[in-house]
Image 1: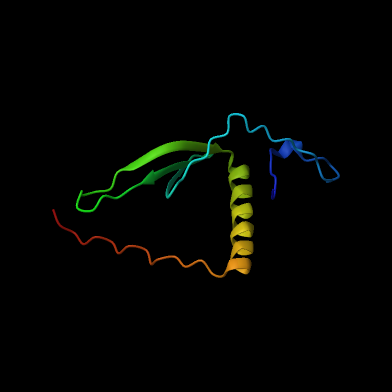
Image 2: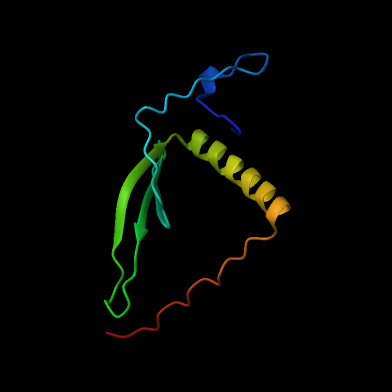
Length: 109
């Protein structure tokens, strides 16, 4: 399955493997090729969605389907787990190339 992370208070004083049962009865699977981040001192929010650009239709429309709200500590745990997972993926399958960031638009009205 992979790494499992939870709330701070679930960590025993002497770490040892803990059995976890996953209830997948209400699980949804979504495809996301878009994310946006927001936050406050108390939480970090990740918005997930998908866009399907239609040629010559103007600005693409993003359909945001899920909002994930995390304590900052759990967001950091997620970040570390994603870094480790991507590193392992690249070790196995090769580097993941990202396109260069878009150039900023020049002024105009």
